[in-house]
Length: 168
Image 1 (cartoon, rainbow, N blue to C red):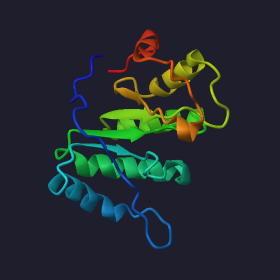
Image 2 (cartoon, rainbow, N blue to C red):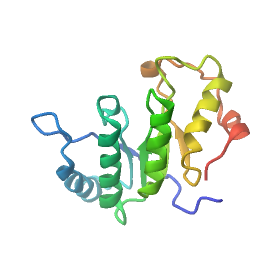
Image 3 (cartoon, rainbow, N blue to C red):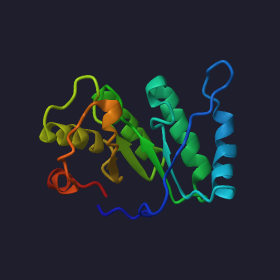
């Protein structure tokens, strides 16, 4: 099925996760944050639950709730909400990917596993394909951040990814 949404164009702002003074996720701030990004910063695309969003410090449930809120409040105001679904657990990543699709995200993204790292480009691509398969109707973006993951498969080109899969 061909992707019918808006393609990414321009800046994609990485959102932080609003927290209360007691370190709980502050969902109530998301709507204000969306309005600020749209009205004051002219942002059209956001990247939710990434490194800036403290994904490694959040539970799967917190990440799902944040994805729902960002999608709900950005709908009609922004072009794209990209949800980062990467986890150390493949099953959690797939769960988050399916959830992102079901709540209306425009695309998903995932980092490489960073504890038991893929040892070859093929292993990395196969892992990412498995994550992307949980949201087959959405574009998938590889979140390549080697200084944090320790995965340095720089020789994986977009052409290598296309050989294995294309979402969207």
